[in-house]
Length: 188
Image (cartoon, rainbow, N blue to C red; front, side):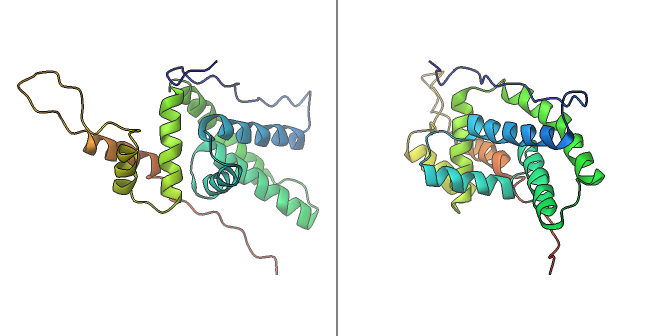
């Protein structure tokens, strides 16, 4: 049984072995890994419909490596279906260039607790729903998911407000949403 304070446990990023599989098979495995990674670090008890909306939003708007890779693979596959061509060297290059970033990201996420990941996912979901950083923090405090004040260390001092710390934290979570463009030319 996993506790909120446990560190994340997740499989390592699959590696490509040209002697064992074709590149398109590997990319399918990698896209499945990216989806499973999302489910492990972002999908914490959302309803089925909310989870689908959140996954689509993250795929479209997040610059985290699992979504960048997933986008590249899905866009390349849709071009293949439309044009019947093979994977471009540019697509393969983009995917492989993101692999190191994904490995590093997975390693850093493994240092986080399920509670930290859950809080981030909830904040990102609220951001997707249109709330500002301040509104997200206010909501999380109202729901008692975040403490408004720190623990009293000295009885003669007032409790320290954690509001600004929470706002900086949530801002870091959402700061990189849509700082890039996903471009796909119209085939018509």
